[in-house]
Every structure is written in C-alpha cells, then in structure tokens.
Amino acid sequence: MLASRIFTEALFRMGYDVKQAEVHGLSQRGGSVMTYVRWGEKVWAPITGDFGANYLIALEELEALRYLHLIRPTGTVLINRYRFVPMSVSSGLRGPDGKPYTYPENVPDLVRRNVPDTHVVDALSIAMELGNARVMNVVVVGAASRLLGLDRGVVEDTVARRVPQKYRELNVEAFRRGWGAVSP
Image (cartoon, rainbow, N blue to C red; front, side, top):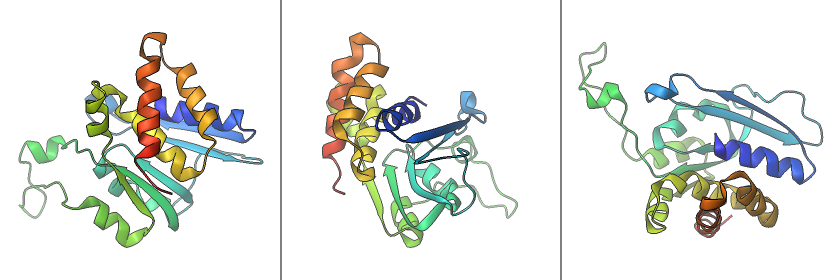
C-alpha cells in the first residue's frame, strides 16, 4: 500500500487528477492486497473494469496472473520476481480433479503471451543487496516509475517524504536502484 500511496502523491504533485482505491481481502492471512491508481486530466473513479487498465504492477508473480484480466493486451506489466506460495499449494491441498495445486512455472512467459510488453525486476535481490528486504516495494516503485515515464525527481522526492526519517536514505537508494533495473 505504500507503493500506491507514493504513486498517488507523486502523480498529484505532477498535476494529474488522481483517484486511488484499496482492496485488502484477507491480506492479514496471506491473501492479496490490490490497489487501483488512476490518473489523467480528469478522473471520475479509481476502479477500472476488465481489460481497462494500461498498467499492471505485481509485487508477487502469482498476482500478475490473478489480475491479468484487468490489463489491456496493449498495456504494460511489471512483475517482481518474488514468489509467495499460497497455503493451498504449500499444504498439498488438492483440487476438484484430485490433483494437487501447484505454483505455475514461468509466470512472466505466461503473462507475456497476453501482454507482450511485460517486464521483470528482481526487487528482493536488490533489496537484499541494500541490506533490508522490506524496501523491495520501493525498488518496484522505482522500476515502475521509469516504465510509466514519470518524473524521476518528483517520485524520488515523494519516496523521501513518505518514509520515516531513519529509513529515508535506504528507501531513496532502493528507488534509484529500481529505476536503474529496467529499460523503458
């Protein structure tokens, strides 16, 4: 949710009309959290329907597949190469066909079949190089900001303003490393 709040504030500071909505689901128990951020000259609602989004940013690989129905085939997808194995898979739960649930292999390739402009960033590795896995989301913000063509200075300043002072330097560096991890 920090990522969507950074985007919302930065886009507003860039002069856009911005609307944001959050759907928490069972996030406290390992479920997904989804946020919508829409911006433009005038935006009436934050939520888009199927195939209505221009961008999809997935902080976890399976989330890219789970929400693929929202993105236009001509859109852009950014997938963080991170896997959070769902309880249904890790517990060996079986589906109605009797086969155990599995985590799909090659998620970026599966997504790319539907949305050719798909990019991958290994934000956890970058965050670990910086010494703190918790900045993984800010690495993704940096990569996504570059792909979206956002004003780097405004987003970087927004990152600095949105995180606690004692983590500011680390998060700004995470943003910068994410920016450098992708090519538009």
